[in-house]
Length: 324
Ligand SMILES: Nc1ncnc2c1ncn2[C@@H]1O[C@H](COP(=O)(O)OP(=O)(O)OP(=O)(O)O)[C@@H](O)[C@H]1O
Ligand SMILES: [Mg+2]
Image 1 (cartoon, rainbow, N blue to C red):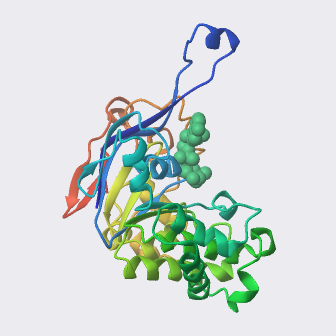
Image 2 (tube, rainbow, N blue to C red; image 1 turned 135 degrees about the vertical axis):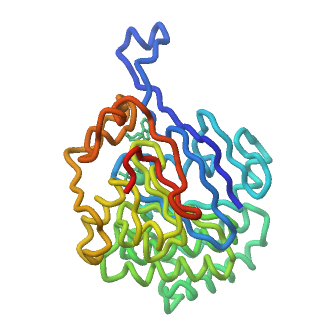
Image 3 (tube, protein in one colour; image 1 turned 45 degrees about the vertical axis):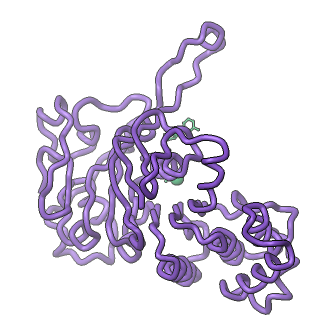
């Protein structure tokens, strides 16, 4: 369904006024710095990593909500990397993003029922009457019942969990083929998370969608994803089937992320790796392996040579000179 090849997204760093006048760019934030992966129909890829590693940027670029700097994005056999105008607009329905903050998806002044109906009308899928009926059914489907109590409410008059249900109903009504869920449950009360994740996965299954599930929390990622990609400073450092990555993590960074989760059994963590310090500055990416400044296994080669992706077992890849 989706193939991403050597994708990059660099944001120019704003300099001072002189730089702006003479059009000089101070440097770049290399938010996404050459990543490749695929997501099949019916598959969930978990995209995991610390804050600032480029997860949201990846999601937005593959959906063409942000212009890629370079690389290729193939969606359902179509090269959408530079698609524009009407052609891009037509694809929008088939690719939806669910953001962490439901307010980012919703209009604060419109009744939530109408917010589900509106995109159906806009994309020419239904007439107004039919769309409203459909929205009514969708509200019930996502558990906002009795529907007559919810249809006319404004987003502000719902709880965070209820708002995220509206967002899911709105996105899934369009029957997209590909969904990016970006920290979709992070802002929701812990007690509600499981039921909302379940709802998302039900739709995914029913519509046979490809999904990217973005989370900084590897313990959620392992529950929902068929495959996991671990990102560090704009790069994928490890990717493979969820059980392989969890049971047999090959990158010290993945090991460290797992070691930080108390519920994952000790025996699965071969080496007790603790990473030092903070994520390096993405404006100033360390040479060689970009993780070397925090890696307890780092040696000289790590400071000089960027590690290539190698296959450690079937469909399980890692980029590390000292993979475990
Ligand atoms: N529009 C922008 N202009 C400049 N820099 C940006 C922009 N958007 C993101 N960045 C930078 O790109 C890097 C990656 O950001 P991104 O939001 O993709 O990370 P993330 O992995 O989603 O983090 P989080 O877990 O905090 O959501 C960060 O250093 C961020 O500051
Ligand atoms: Mg993000």
